[in-house]
Amino acid sequence: MAEIVAVHGIGQYGSSAGRLRETWLPALREGLTRAGAVGLVDLERVDLDCVYYADELRPGGKDAGMVPAYGPADIEPGFEQELLTLWWRAAAAYEPDRVPGPDSLTKIYSPQLVQRALASLSRSTFWSAVPRRVIIAALKDLRRYLYVPGIRKRVQARIVAALGPDTRIVIGHSLGSVVAYEALHNVDGATTELLLTVGSPLGIPHLVLDRLEPPSEAGQGVWPAAVRRWVNVAGLEDTVALVKDLAPVFGRRVEDHVIRNGLRAHDVTRYLASAEVGRAVADAVD
Image 1 (cartoon, helix red, strand yellow):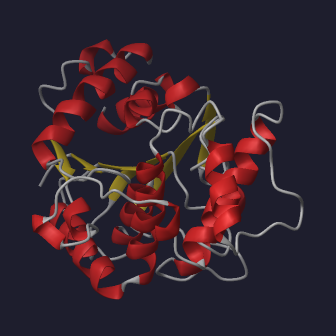
Image 2 (image 1 turned 120 degrees about the vertical axis):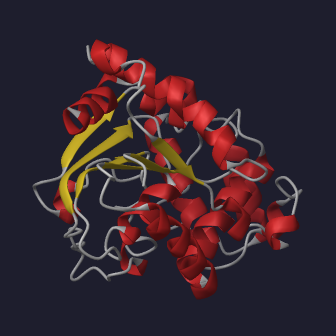
């Protein structure tokens, strides 16, 4: 079993465990360098396993291709429309001069409002470089994992199979933080030194928090018993990580850090290359 298990986030159609490792490892080295952990920069003695599961989320399953050509009409009522509304509100709150926001009572119930939300997001610094089909695919990835039991079960099986007595660190990015959090509730007898969540939507009330397994109680999430330390890093500009601080939701032991990621606010390499991530990894490996 690997010493570090990495769980990717949304939008990884057409990737693989090997490709993910090629992306994650250099960024993690940069984070260690920024943290001053020069003895670990080469990571020669650290085994990193990137678990791939996006094929379980894709329409058509394992044989499906890249991101489908989604359009506004493909955004489904309920979860997808409500999460899009939250992203819209967050983008408008962060950049009120650039992004026209919804009024306080707006909820997306019509094709016209879906179009308006997508058009508004396209004006934000964070979302402007993201194609609409990718935004819609992200909504669908989150919904499928949280609401389709068969998908969740298969994804969880992959992550749990990668965890073992040698696993010291579990890193979850974006949707992967939700997947990793739940997997750490499903391992028997194993102890993980560090759960590291980056760009996480775990704290979003109702839409995400209320769908977690094990379920939250009165808005409070359950600390994974297998985890000794939990570090959460959120980009100030990252509207996927809507709730930046997880300690109020999952307990005061969560160590929250808010960083500046710039234009590529949700990019996993920006997170992994940060000193905050580097320090957390170095502490757990030493």
